[in-house]
Image (cartoon, rainbow over all chains, first blue to last red; front, top):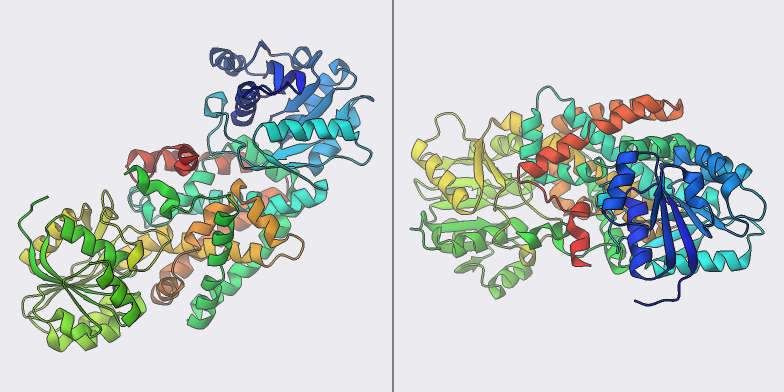
Amino acid sequence: MTNAPIFERMALIGIGLIGSSLAQAARQRGLVKEIAISTRSEATLRRAEELGLGDSYSVDAAVAVEGADLVILCVPVGANEAIAKWIAPALKKGAILTDAGSTKGSVVAQVAPHVPEGVHFIPGHPIAGTEQSGPDAGFPTLFDQRWCILTPPENTDPDALEKLKAFWQGCGSDVDLMDPKHHDLVLAIVSHLPHVIAYNIVGTADDLEAVTKSEVIKYSASGFRDFTRLAASDPIMWRDVCLNNKDAILEMLARFSEDLSALQRAIRWGDGDKLFEMFTRTRSIRRSIIEAGQETDAPDFGRHSGD
Amino acid sequence: MTNAPIFERMALIGIGLIGSSLAQAARQRGLVKEIAISTRSEATLRRAEELGLGDSYSVDAAVAVEGADLVILCVPVGANEAIAKWIAPALKKGAILTDAGSTKGSVVAQVAPHVPEGVHFIPGHPIAGTEQSGPDAGFPTLFDQRWCILTPPENTDPDALEKLKAFWQGCGSDVDLMDPKHHDLVLAIVSHLPHVIAYNIVGTADDLEAVTKSEVIKYSASGFRDFTRLAASDPIMWRDVCLNNKDAILEMLARFSEDLSALQRAIRWGDGDKLFEMFTRTRSIRRSIIEAGQETDAPDFGRHSGD
């Protein structure tokens, strides 16, 4: 595709699944003229260079952001504050600073105080990913037909916001605007709780004495394996999410546990009507997700199509 | 394929996902000469006939099993006892009676007392399925590379067991033998708990006041949608599983909740090291499941391959 570039120089701080996918999407669709990549691991940086993801590479984030009119932090959310301090003096006046982190309240609290005047800070979160991580995991269509949530502070420059929206739309996404607090509540239920639960059930299975690990693996197609995908996600990323969206996650965990107690009680007392009712209302949500284009309608996630 | 048929007449009682897939697998691979189908719903029976799944169709299960040397109960486990009573007088001497239910202790308790002498009762459970149900959901490769667990009672006739094993192997499965009690414990962790948890989390999300259903649907690609697949499974089947494997499910729920409390505590107290440790050990299980051929290794279950 041949769009007019929206930005002259994009700096990606962090080049894992998200950074790598952004580099490829932006390059393929002509959204930026130049891509500067920075990550603190020399090995990862070298790999990004081998993959040809950018035009320049530096372990020094301040070097990467020099002259950039778009800077995207693509690191685990716990690393944002240190990077913000590091790059602040090097940010160009008029640049847009954004991120791709899964929590937004914490990013505002930890990054905003360090943003120099004249730099447009607009936090963001693409609702896209896979369970894989690292620069090799990226692919240019990751953001297609996925939502990207931006949480612009009050008094955000409208032109800067428009440019950032156009960038994400260029990557294939639809853009929603939201308050950071509401974002964190929404993501706590649609993403953080599912990951925490998936990690937990895989841990429970791993700990059993009476059922061997080999049995869990052999018979996993009966349900368990679905959870192992989320539970194979990057542990650093998810540690940071839990530490940085604590209140909303604890709230969702409390509701989940309350509901689970009710379900457990229905099982204990053999309340078939209650169980049937609980198991019936959940089908329509999946149907809606498929209709919204956010899920495949092939049975079993389409796994059998490759058989 | 042209195998010599293992059975003369197979009667399938129930023609949902499993019955329909068995009919198609057995036909395609020449495992049986004749297929008799019975289900209590006239509409479903008509649909099975339209799909050409069998050679004869009857709402009377006793008619279907007449002369059959293989009878497979493919109904929700709660229906097994009534069917056993119904068909018992019509079962042919020397016939093999088996089932495809997700619980085995309950099947032994509810069916065995009604099995006439001279009939070989060997409970079974194919570890295969999708979230869809009904005769249209079936397909002949459902059992390929999946395990089928048989729980033969002591003193089971070895020839009958060999024939039933050969049938399942003909359907593409590997066969394991197990004690019913152990089966129920294994399945409680690999299948029943995951389904109960998935139903529960989808219910929790559905009940929120502060997050709309439309938001849950839009942003579901961030994790939630994975759970909706299991939670879209047949509610009658899962009600019956919960009612018929109560003790093992309650045991697994107790362990899961205990582990979740520990995880919740780590979140509340910001124990990053503990969270990292909990989130790290789970990756290797997925790797093992993929290596065992029980899961695709494409990222995101291969959803993106169809993009």
